Length: 162
Image (cartoon, rainbow, N blue to C red; front, side, top):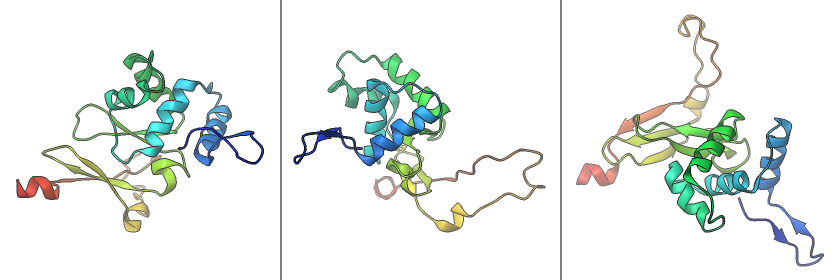
């Protein structure tokens, strides 16, 4: 997500498509749009690293120096509750996050994750066969399934050779 910028021809302020989609999504779900939430979402939409709350905090502090880590956690949870952010659980370590709002950041295309069991690197996994996976009613065992996310665990190339 790019920052809000002035257009050269008119001097009017224009938001990027990601930011406009994010603002609309928040408003449709009754969540107040704040500078902190926009900055946090911007970091997540621009990253493919699946950052932790601590990494998000460090990235946003340049723009908002008084932002606390507790505020990052609180806002990530608020954004997760409306579907703008997803938590990526890398082997039950601290939470890692990505933008999941359809059409923005990582939400541009459905995907799953590859997780290195040694260094905990998380990479996006794009495979249409996994995207099409559906549970049968019997296999779901009475669950009302809202999403299927696949996490493939193994050793990344760097850890395999180390």
